Image (cartoon, rainbow, N blue to C red; front, side, top):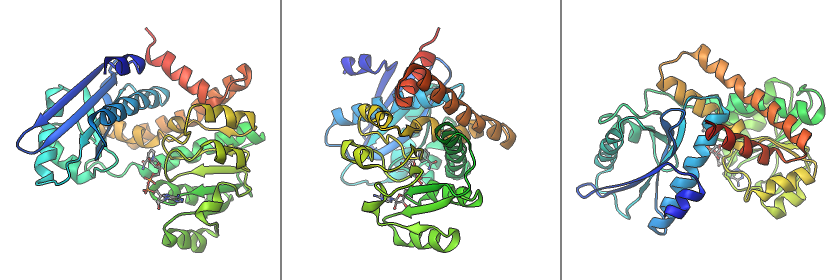
Length: 340
Ligand code: NAD
């Protein structure tokens, strides 16, 4: 465990249990140098405890990088609650988790993530104020979509020489909370949409409302387009997929798009400009962080503009040093997170 913490430069790891509710939780704080560590709470079943610890540590590091490159005064953390086969009293379990978070005295702020809902966050909020994405705080997805839209424009400017989206062919994988809102922004800017979703209803809506062209989910990734926007699941860019992409750039919302770090280099070698996912999809984090701090919508809009600025910097450095944007983003984040 210490080796894993050392490799990922994790500051601390907190393990808690509550006999009465069956709570078994892991909280990884990657860094609190810039401010409290903010990051979601997962509620999933894991094959073993080691896998849960690994997930918390890996994701906490990603949150530090995301916060840093979004220009937020925050560190990165993540929590994992091991989902038991049978949940007796879900509310009581999350209330117990709220007491654990409170015991960290504000070093960790939690939020909704895979397997948790805003109602779970409401339960946590009964015992601590260090929680975001409650039902009162609102859905961050529209802000994620706005950030991705601005970042996609910056990516288009870097790849094609200007940021005019008129007639640009954008293929969107996944028309959920973020993907559909992104499609709406792109449509309003004159882009041509190519879409896929495993939910046929979402696809039909995009065809009717936005004049999108529907493509089968298995065909989308190799459909010719200018920009591919993965907005469904993570891990979509593996070696066979990267080899058959027919786009000029990849800029989408999905977390952990690269199956391995080497995929960033493969995209680069193929002349496909990749917008590092944790940079372009930081709009939701910006929204929850600033809302939690009581800041207004003007501040949120101003902070969202960091996304496209940061991407432009990354692309310029990548070009100057002949490195992939993914590598440049990782090095920059690491440098900034651990700067004295
Ligand atoms: P969502 O669940 O609302 O939407 C995902 C959509 O993708 C669904 O409509 C689903 O049917 C579709 N989908 C799943 N597999 C697919 C496949 N193989 N082909 C085509 N479509 C497929 O999720 P969301 O909130 O829109 O988030 C989308 C992605 O962005 C996720 O990876 C998420 O982690 C990431 N993200 C979201 C936010 C946010 O604010 N919601 C913030 C940062 C990152």
